[in-house]
Length: 181
Image (cartoon, rainbow, N blue to C red; front, top):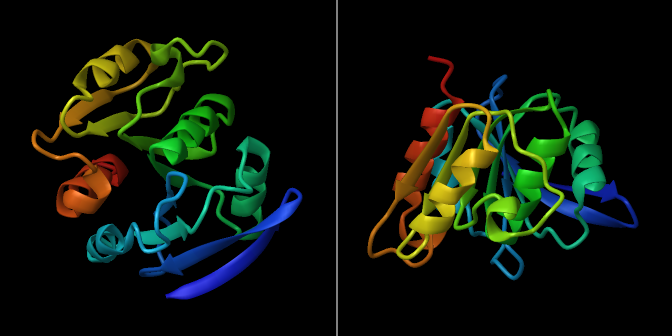
């Protein structure tokens, strides 16, 4: 795994880059307070599917603008977005406002912000999957009207934290979204 520190906005961001050199990359955004190794099990599975992973260690210094700067600095033009909790909120914003930069969106434990009565976030126009654990189905379903592309909801009953408790299932959803078939 390659650790890279990138200057973004008024601070910097550390990312963990790993996996085969491939034209298919996945940007993984954690929630606030998530451990730096949150996505390690997911990444290991993604590498077996020929996907390069860029796992952000913390989203503290990231907003829409700085996330795009991060991708530019890493020379990544086209990426699949994955976000967990607050990282998913940022991923929804990126997918909605940066048309042509993102191939797909996988939001974990968060629906579209407008489905939660947060005004001002436009719909997304990329294939989208919302993965939720127990109790998250209603907001996931409500997000469908804010996705102008293929939309899927995956509910994992009995799971409280999808990334920690169901990394294989999450990796499967990511692979399904990143596959060109």
